[in-house]
Length: 167
Length: 266
Image (cartoon, rainbow over the protein chains, first blue to last red):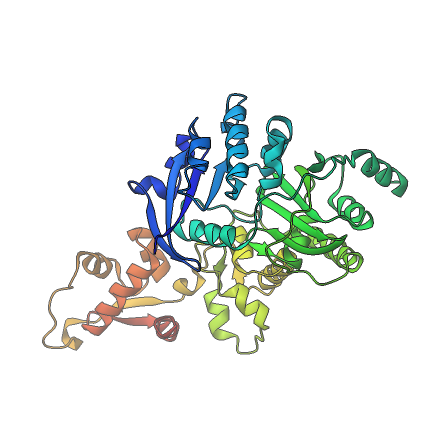
């Protein structure tokens, strides 16, 4: 039986170097609840869309940080996200640091990725067990984004709510 | 999808929680601050269901978040939590959390700086048979080892940070824990040389260089604390050499033999 392949994407070479994958060449084989799993590390480049549609990968996790998110990255991520959606390959975006900054950048430059953002605990990319847990959780839930809901900005309501409380 | 973003200097966390609760929204409030690891809380139809603030989860994490005054937030709509750690009503949690926060601030003013290393007061722990500690106090005390800082001890203690801080404060007040290295017990121990005519017949030379240096400084008047200061070695290394020298018939005690025996046993 062929292994489940998961793409472990990094927003920059420096982030990959700071991860568990810096200590090894190529992919990493591991066992998870879903069976044998191959974790394939890659720094985001223009081929992201091709990889998404290759049929090789069951899911992808993109680890990113605010310092790597320049305006030039947005088109790559947007076209990559589109390719993943079309190929029905789940993609999650995990902020390695500054989650609110990452969300703010996504809202402005790649809004289709906001729904894929997952900031739900400690991020330890240097630890193999963190990757194993990440992939196990990623594959066990449906992370394809929900159909786009109507945009709703609650900022005015929040301001009114706080003003009404009177302090 | 991020329907609110903002600054915690402008909106207090209790206000944000109350607002999401009263709007009956589902999703994740993501929080970041320069002073701490990223944190967040999850709502399901306005009900608070999960909080994390590494290394804590659940109610202790929520209580810790209530102390945040600086940072930024974003609310992601319809993001579901991976687990549920909170089952209590938000209003009760806020009341309890803010009351504890007030108490914690009073205690925090009296605690040493977070980077201060905590030490056990060994003499007191050994000698005071009347000390009765709760399970929580033992759990905190177990992390005090003369190397960990106050901040590390509070993190390792688990549970709510204010509870651990209250316990550390109590232990400091009871003088079971100290911020200074406690070598009073070493002052009370005075070794002396065993004269050649009382030494075992097969006594060889002191077995190590450090043992030689220790023997040279032992004169029946210097305490172990004074010898330790002169040799600039660790307390453990000195205790090991002393043990060796007592066993090989080189040293005995002019004073404090009982303390030394208790130290070895502990």
